[in-house]
Amino acid sequence: MPPPRTLLAYSAPRSGFGDEWMTFLPIGLGYLQAMLKSRSFPCRVANLSGKGRKEVLAYFRAQDPAVLGISMFTFNRKRSYELLTWAREACPSAILLAGGPHPTHLAEEVFEDCPALDAIVQGEGETVLLGLVERLRTAPGSDLWRRTPGLILREGRTLPQPPLEDLDAVGVPAEHLEADFLNDVGQNTWEEVDEGSAGANYGWPATEGATANPAYTGPVYAYPHSGGPVTGCCIVGAAFYDPATPAFPAAFLHKYLFMDLCEGWVRTLDPATGTVGDWLTGFSSPVDLRVAGDGSVLVLSRGGGGTLQRVTYATP
Ligand code: B12
Image (tube, rainbow, N blue to C red; front, top):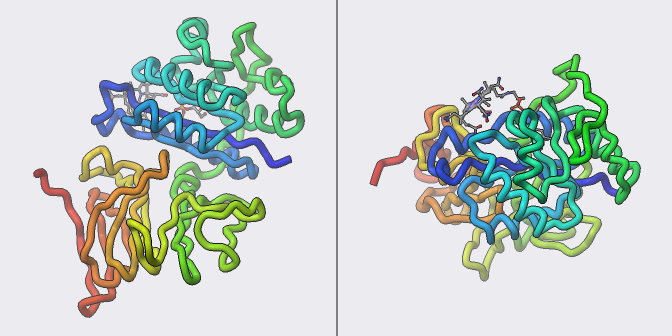
């Protein structure tokens, strides 16, 4: 039985979709992911700020998690209720959790306002979430998870979970976010972006592009060498747009920026939805891309005798 998959999500409130402070992914979700991934439990983190119902439903369905948790604050509680309602619609058998300061302190009100919610994780969530997925792995489909210490259920609370003593045991949060995507240069036909996870086999060179073979992990996104709306010959770069000081519009935040060596373009991939957007063209044999701390993007190319170009944002 494969370990249960967890999806952790956050969204800014509707009023804050364009606000870079509100759309910041809370680092608490990164710690929860680090705890699970370092114990070989698959866990994805998504920032769903600005995403509409159709996009969110499609994403939840594609992820098909056993556990779906939302990070809830007072300022985004209504949007979190909305996400949980959509989660129930898209994934009827998933365990739906909420964690964070708001549900920890106002559990009764949250349960009342959000019928879709199964349980609240009280306070520090790393050990609680790990205990819950461990129980699910031991007894899939049973109610054993409801006895995990640190939960608030509609019918009452489980035993309290003492705080973590060894914080180093959690792992490094951003490492998992950054390392989540891998460029997989194709053999003859397809270039891939794959999601990194322990023990996964991406099939090179036996298979390229999407695969239905359960022995292999298929790509998050793939483009062919010819015959598609997007083509190229060798994926290069890449980086997530998560600089200390964002200098591009909020729509760029958390996007994966990747390039093609032969075609000289840079495109954006939204890790939350898999949507790919056109961005820059005209680089001559680009080989590497970095996001600088000031929010600009550096592109290193071999063409033209070798260039290092800085891309900055100019207000239209
Ligand atoms: C650092 C910080 C920031 C940083 C965040 C940087 C980042 N990328 O995370 C910055 C400066 C960007 C920021 C911005 C804002 N912040 Co702030 N911030 C904090 C602060 C000081 C620490 C948060 C933190 O990182 N804690 C450490 C992590 C590990 O703990 P955690 O976040 O609580 O997460 C744990 C648990 O809550 C739980 N958990 C959380 N979510 C989930 C989800 C699931 C499924 C599970 C199982 C568990 C779980 O498990 C996590 C791991 O143990 C808190 C105050 C505080 N002391 O908590 C305020 C605080 C969270 N911020 C607050 C506010 C209001 C904001 C802003 C709205 C301000 C604004 N007007 O723009 C924005 C919103 C940004 C956002 N997207 O969250 C309020 C929220 C109040 C409330 N009741 O909702 C707080 C509580 C401060 C306060 N007392 O007013 N903030």
